[in-house]
Image 1 (cartoon, rainbow, N blue to C red):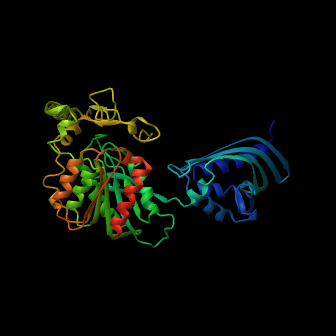
Image 2 (cartoon, rainbow, N blue to C red):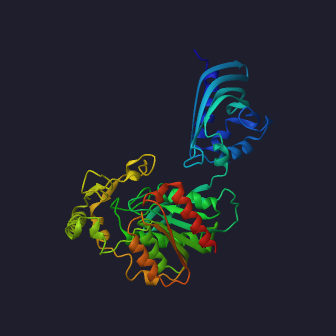
Image 3 (tube, rainbow, N blue to C red):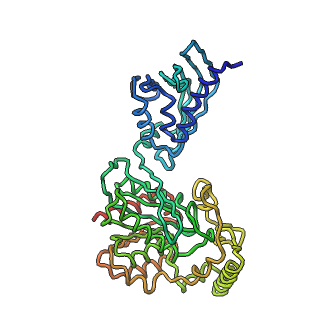
Length: 443
């Protein structure tokens, strides 16, 4: 049986790895003495050395993996008065989404730890990792160290709390004021989908990026849930602009927007309204128009049916508070918002992520069915505009029609190759779009 001190030693060691996986660096550092001796030389080029626990935690925190998972076992603990030693085995997994060369790296090995008993409990005075083998992307640590800084932020829109993430370049220093871009993705999406993919790449180019969940979606407030409304999303972006104008890391004179798929219609409306938006861009723009909407929804009868369902659902909600929902995506259900096969929404490696709830409030149909994102909008875009599109993307003729009607003296149409959803998350299409947009925004 373990003695109480042996159990407490194991508890201290477990605490290090549990808090590291939670990224609770203050708590993690408290399991070490002020200046422990650390030896990870079998895993890295850093020599074994005595280092302050605070500096060590700052170093660990600067390596921004999406998540880590440490599993330790087979403890051999020896206690001698106020000192103890522990040997054990460990397996660690590290994950960084979309990393070049693979998004996971795993290390297997053993550990040796020395501990001392203090009034605050057992603390580690020496810590050594002995690498046995590693698998996966061995460059992942370096990539994680160069990955953007992410900060949780919130602001208010129409009385509801909007939850978001401010992404900053890894080189950001306090006091800097950076140009900022907001990215908006396809309908029904949350910030962890298209917004996150583009946001991290833009941060690597030196921009600050604000991604957030619109009202009714994701972590943000608002009811009914999963209500798709372009007009309400426009209001949220206008509030987001005011939030950015007061943020200490943001150059308020340099706010730009990017809209992908249905996000384009929202972005362009804000660009026509706000004097604070300096430049705007669209990628694989889905520009809804009454002439083309019936093509996707069973003709005029299909459009009328969805409008009727929407009006009935809205009336039901007003009178009873009950919301009618369908799935956002189901290729086997014609009632779903998206009822045709789309790998992006069925593939857990792409868009079918845990944060996306695959729900659509039926009352959202009417606004979507009657939307016009070309007429009386294109002629109001007087700021620099770049549009990235392809013949393989949806509604290419609508994009050309919109672009030709824009009066801005600074506009660019980039026609490339790719299927519509490849512009959501495929490196070739996303990298091309980001490269062209960054070059245009900087010109």
